[in-house]
Length: 333
Image (cartoon, rainbow, N blue to C red; front, side, top):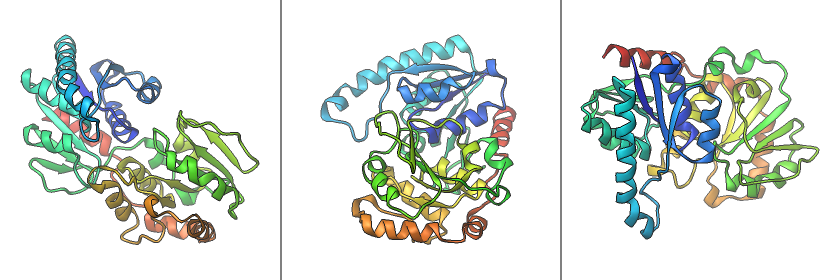
């Protein structure tokens, strides 16, 4: 059975989509994504066919970009319809973000069944719009929408095959700015980390726009493509709280210091972080009220905790079979 999958924007949309796609034959899957360099990097390590479109969302754009938005939408819509007619998928899966708006319209025009997956605890705008027109809506957490089926957030198998307590030697601390990197981390954390009490080697993912010389304590990487393997050596993580990140932290049982993205739509990253921490925000930080001295104090405090015990508290059964179960639901419905 052929399927088209619409997944773009961030790794939080793309990685779960790739996990689901692994349960179909390679030549049965067609991805639609944007033409951003980051997405090309992520998809390049997979064997799936991908159509990269020149797309961008509506919210948060300038007036000029909003004026040209309908024209851009129309051009890309015709491209999507053309590719769908050529590929002939039986069904389509929307993973959220602007690309899913194109997927929704094109599939309604072609009378194709649509499925949807929402990764976050608060539904994004595109998925909210699409959810009334789908055959089934898969969610990571209970949201309370029409045709909902809570399946968990699909994650890469390596996060399920290992866990924090089984890996005895922890030689690294990991700083992850998300698939696009994080300017706030890049600008504010290196000096603090350098002066901290952390003895382990710090691996700092910066994204493509940032370049810095390695020090005796910190190793900078633009992109990390094997985070599951790196987790086996990691004492704790400093990161954002996108849905995919939170799911992977919980599945592995990885202790983390969290900085929710302050301008995330509907503040969903703060909600994700509180779910991870079970309401305890002691190590959840707001970058708009960031105090370097206070953070250094809390960082050293976190570093000295019994992190194996903390790992047991944060580890959750988050449907490691979610990708397989979602694929089966699509095939059977």
